Length: 507
Image 1 (cartoon, rainbow, N blue to C red):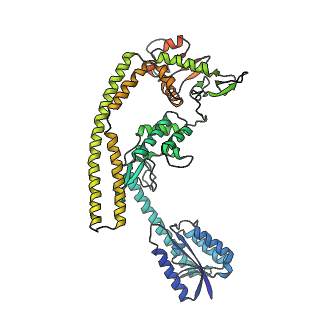
Image 2 (cartoon, helix red, strand yellow):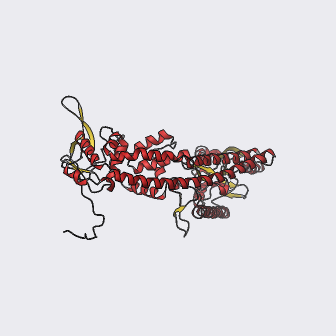
Image 3 (cartoon, helix red, strand yellow):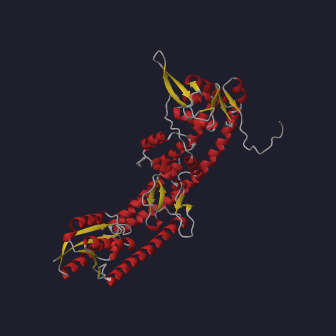
């Protein structure tokens, strides 16, 4: 009696298991009608035929290599179950016959693949080519549909939802909805990155806040993902262009912020800065050669440790941290803002806050209308369930979809409806502090001190010959620049922005 093994497969896990049952039925009939004994079965569920890298197909090859002397045939329902790549499939079946003397049989197509029989070889090759052509046509249709959905309709189609969003709706109505709790974490990540907070510190703070994505590059992927700016990345399709296209979902960060982050990520930052409260300016202040200053403690003769800022070049800066900090506090004294300017800032901030309050009220009203509509849809689903018009699976799916949407809308309405009076109180309480910059800086934690320095000097604070120097400084805080230089604290020589413009006077 001849002996055979069989290979069964279907592509999508979402398909009914009936596909495997049907293949089993046809191959069982063939075995019975031809008096062939079945030795073993190998089944790949939810695996594509584009490649032979499938778990049970690999087991099949191992089995044949060990037991080929006791096997005569390999049965498949159709040759496209075996593979949809005609070239690879032909080589594989030739190998089975030439090396192991095993023939491939397609039971429903009535083909016994025999490399030594021209008619059989031609029929098998034709079936495999037709399967591959069908696969190509399907791929074109799928890629065309994906391009239209993403580029034309602005839909986000990736299976896994991005952190910061929830998936709402079904079918073509499915879209991303902002998850307010997670969105706060995403905004914090972007904000800290632009404030030059070291990446390891961003990860630490994000995970403490509830960030749940794993991997060393998890934060980097959030920073690089255009979905947070309300964009969707689309691959080129035929003559149609690829790139970034506007999406229908609400962004978490604005496009300007996202673009600034992408520009910053492209820059190679070879200096890894570790936060130390004793030397907050490490990596922020630069040597006159342009190298960010490092910092470390040095043990004195008494056994006490003293901190220093130093350049990696041995003959460049090596500054006492105590001296550097005291000099910077003196700079802060001269940066304090006059009362007249504080009043102007207060008036401008009040106007901006009032405008934002007005806009938020309108958004809250719009979201309340949307909430009522979703609640009505949920009520309709419940009524259909009570009247036995839908089954439990359908009810559960729509109940969870609408419930998640309601929770997100409720959180959004709460955010837009918050009493903005607190913002005015914070403004009044903190604006007067601008009159004492030394106090602000001294009371700040290490991250805030680093952010403050980078913001005021735009990352261009240098130290040379015992004094701080900068070509860039916030205009608001530079009103005493001449006094800073006279006291030996800071030399501010403003950099000309356009060297092609000839000055009105002077040499």
